[in-house]
Image (cartoon, rainbow, N blue to C red; front, side, top):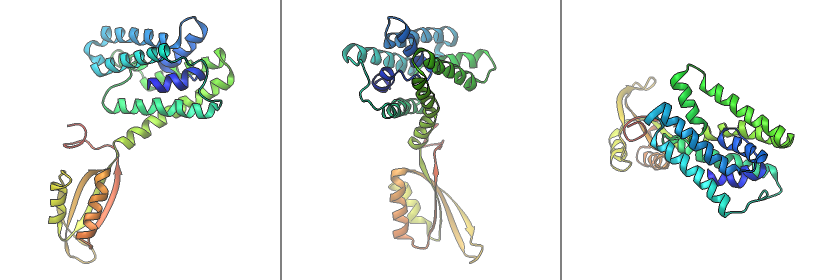
Length: 263
């Protein structure tokens, strides 16, 4: 995340809201650098988090916030980046969106955050009954709009595009990271299939007896969820060992239970 912000957001003045967006603007109108402001603001917010939330701030959030701030400050110190890497602003905008957003998605997926305005959201959620998402979006939009004044209209419009796209990329990455395959298998011979699921894939399954509405024959329905990499193996095993089996495969991005998330 630090690399994406430093190499693509800072030199192009892309402000997508949040602490880094505010730091870019403050860095442009003062003598301090954007990296320095990122470090200062994040540390102040962490202190506020401990004051108002106590341990609720979360050790993962503290660790990530400090590491991000120090990473950006270190890059500023050791990598002299006075201008954008390329002369293609759209290309730089794509990387400025995708790299930090993908990193944010990974962080969110392990139950942490990069601090910053997330700490403000946690404080507001604790003490006030307000729509947190709307409030933070409004603040991010104000910070992004300020780019039009501090820099120019083109930079501001690029920043607005980044603000909109960032959340879409985060949602997409989280969904793909957690993507699993949900199998519904109808078979007359469920034994080998269940054994393969248990012994080879190290997952369990749920079975129940059913009857075909047309043939009136007894069938067994097997329900199981496997990782994406295991789905191909399970599908091939069923096709090779039970040609009459009926298989339905569905994408699922949120599985909570033993062997998956939440346990």
